[in-house]
Length: 224
Image (cartoon, rainbow, N blue to C red; front, side):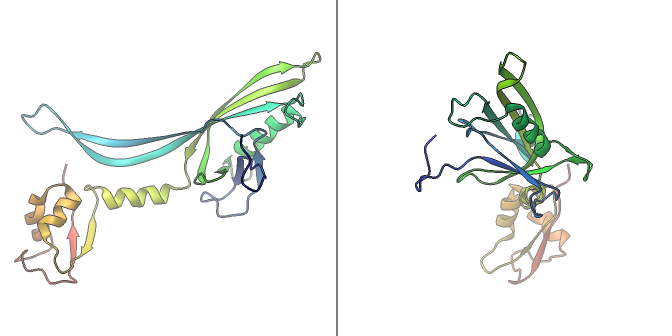
């Protein structure tokens, strides 16, 4: 792993919080012994498959963004071969304390994963496995690999706001500006300009062609 420009090696760190948005002071942290060689970010988008009568294909209507997953693998070495000797079991217990159940909040800790230029990931532990690779004669573990998956959680408000801004199944309000046309706005929100008559009716507009700038237009949810 290359050093940073100032020669200081930054370690991936997981900070534990009690507040869902991680706005409070961290109650602890886990620093990687060796930075991971690979970080996997997985995203999932949920759609409703709407198929018109008499058609063979389906139109994938956006429904919502699901929480994303972050997968990490931590290598722990207690032999000193990497220049730093650690207590492997103690490091594993440190990871478990930071990421797992917290009796004070009656659930797992809320986490922030930070490293370099990566966007700070606010998440909770989804699952983890520990593979012990080497033992001393007395059974003390000398090497281990922690494979962990985290799921997005603290950005729920942001994801909901994004969904509400984009989904045609939720209510929208727009302030009509000079140059705006109702069919064009319907096309932006619903993906179909033909809904302009329904929007005009919902807003009590007698003439959709002459809407005064500054008028607030209500775009109702589409009926399934």
